[in-house]
Amino acid sequence: MVLSKAASDSDVSIHSTFASRYVRTSLPRFKMGENSIPKEAAYQIINDELMLDGNPRLNLASFVTTWMEPECDKLMMASINKNYVDMDEYPNRCVNMIAHLFNAPLGESETAVGVGTVGSSEAIMLAGLAFKRRWQNKRKAEGKPYDKPNIVTGANVQVCWEKFARYFEVELKEVKLRDGYYVMDPEKAVEMVDENTICVAAILGSTLNGEFEDVKLLNDLLIMKNQETGWDTPIHVDAASGGFIAPFIYPELEWDFRLPLVKSINVSGHKYGLVYAGIGWVIWRNKEDLPEELIFHINYLGADQPTFTLNFSKGSSQVIAQYYQLIRLGYEGYKNVMENCTENMMVLKEGLEKTGRFNIVSKDNGVPLVAFSLKDNSCHDEFEVSDTLRRFGWIVPAYTMPPDAQHVTVLRVVIREDFSRTLAERLVQDIQKVLHELDTLPARVNAKIASSSEENVKNGALVTKKSDIEMTREITTYWRKYVSDKKKTSGVC
Image (tube, rainbow, N blue to C red; front, side, top):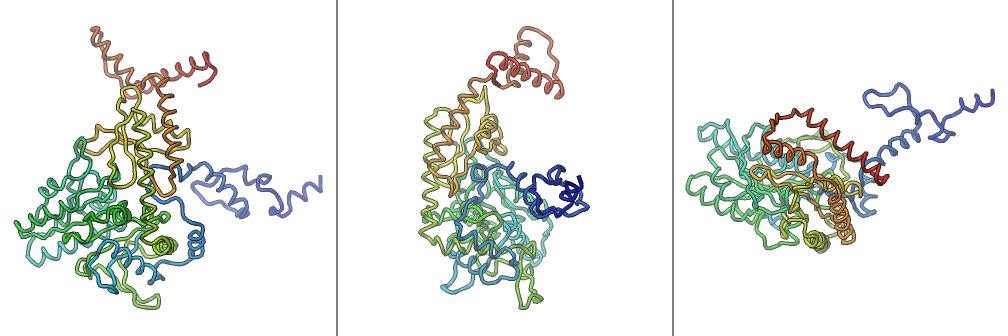
């Protein structure tokens, strides 16, 4: 007994983690623990919980990069302890390369105007602030009111635009969508522009269906309106998804600084810039488009440093990774990656079409993704398809379109660099299995209940509207009975 007690009181580092007391208690969720625990135990316990997360590469909801070359991984780990604010050279190199990619009017060795950000959300905040300040300065100089700025966008914009509008007190004027047309209509957008519009935001690659908005038509219509009214309403292009696609796949498409009214562009490095999550960029056409009063100059890090960001300190790994990809892949490499993504998108699209069960909502030209909806969702809907696919490991989102197309529900698969043809073919097979499985199940319970109520009305029975709790209880009872019957007949649920 003495020897046993001595062993248990000895250095905990000699014991297996799973033989220790640390696996017998839950991880802290609200308060720090009173005592320290061995590093091995802390690692093992957290690592075990992380196993419950989905496989990032099978998360087809996300545009964010989930694979990079091992050499780049090494560079990122080597720079993980370096602060972004201590680095001047690498962010500037990336900004210059991306500005030239977007056809900024720069000389051969002229420095571009831009900044690295945490992602496109921060980039959009900075671009929006620049537009707001330039508009306010002009209105003040003209002696006109400057307290009611607005931005015109489509209803398909990402939520970061709504955040900008709410956080910085700018009215968001949204062009509603319509059935079959799920991006901003340039004509309707220009009609909504008034003297208080600080910019019109166009999207190069809608989150909903990957479609590129017609920035060229928007630019031409807005030029005419500016000439008629005397305004100088500019354009911002949200190229979060499409900024690293269009230059390589659609080089003739005019959407960037080739258009005179495009004053700033944001792009996500962590999407088709092929870098892990945490990097975005915003580029301005020239210095005049970024008001000088928004730029801060600091010297307490050893030298004069201009800064225009919403935060200060952040990791530098993603900037290093972006620079690696730009010099490693070059134009040729990015073009090959985007062509592969586009080809695998077509494989998936054609496979879904062959099932005869889906309508394809996305376009062939745009961000490589496939958005699709069921031709007949009277028995089972897109949400059930999405939920059942999770059992095969796939994360495929289902969602409704924004106003005025909210009656349309779609599933969406984003084709990233690491989504191969084999995976595309396997996904089609698994979707077919899901459809077959759903076909063997009864129709949605709420649909059955609704049809039952309609039948009672036809027969003259008095039907009172059930509360949410009553509906939930009825659905639960139905499924319990269904599961019980399945167990009795087959032994399998």
